[in-house]
Length: 125
Image: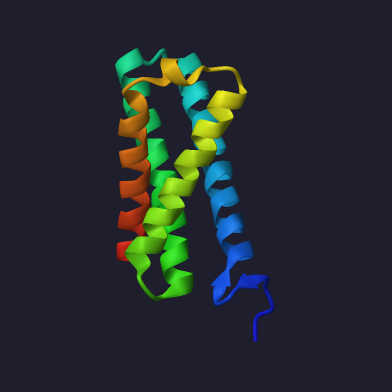
């Protein structure tokens, strides 16, 4: 039997590891994007689209892994992982000095994209 810290039947340690790996994936993909931006000179519109795709891909991965592990209500676990990803992302933005008022409409869009990416990953797991 697998020994992990749980809260009831919830493997908290696994969910945190999955979330951490999705941030590592995000960092690697953003570094690749920065390299391409430097070498190719991508336009601002393309960079914005790729950043959105990176967020969706990272949350899809987190939701997929959570759904695979938990096997029950996969879409809800994916939604939870996508929402947790967004909350950490928003928290880091606020800590780094961006006031909440400046976040604007992009906050809602980013929340929806992260939650939907995680939920889709959970459903397809």
